[in-house]
Image (cartoon, rainbow, N blue to C red; front, side, top):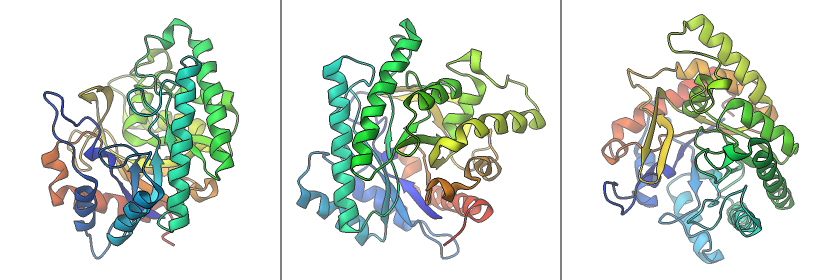
Length: 339
């Protein structure tokens, strides 16, 4: 099982708006990742956000091959890719009108094209393409939950057909901010309605799914309440992971302190914490095991760290990445084959 770092912490919640920190370039994120080392072990690869300023998803074949050369030159492979599906990028809402859903599907096609170029280059040999509903917040979805979930499912089904035609699989990000995917129950209902497990599955993130457990944006689906004990936690954690694990084809190691967090336009999402954060709610290694049972049977060949919306001062500290890498090695050694 390979160990990857994500590139999007250099982008998400950052930018030119007032109060935002500047984005960290792709090359700097690669260099920070390459500098980490624990007992001779380094990161094997990266997961990659297909949007500016790291990448123009409409870049030419030659430009994309040049990026692949740079990544490979740093000693990395590429795993999962994040499609540019959101309003304001290439795509738009998966539960919108035809113009919006056509944009969503166009963005998935672009991601599949990039994946194909990376695959042909040789820098990428495994991984999924990550999507979500591209409908931020629940207000519009809540006007007709059943009907809007069906709209999302219909769009996802068409997107899954596109991915399958390109030899790719889509992984739906489980996060409380995405309409129709904002609780473990809504996510499961959506996956089952799409009903294309060979082409579309679930991307589990330890930080985000902790908030699933607590029912942050769907109290009716909460499995735990504040003040829970450890025995109760693991019983309910197993209940949730048993339902979503069969769909899980992509996995993010992360930590969460039970709070939500936002920066810029990216608001009210799972608050990722440092791997050794004293306020972290999760035993990262133990909790990862619930998701990684029989992982390779589901085609998972790598695990990825997600430290989305860390301050730049944290991202630029080599000690941050050594601690994260050490945690990732512990997860791999406890639950995954090392071949």
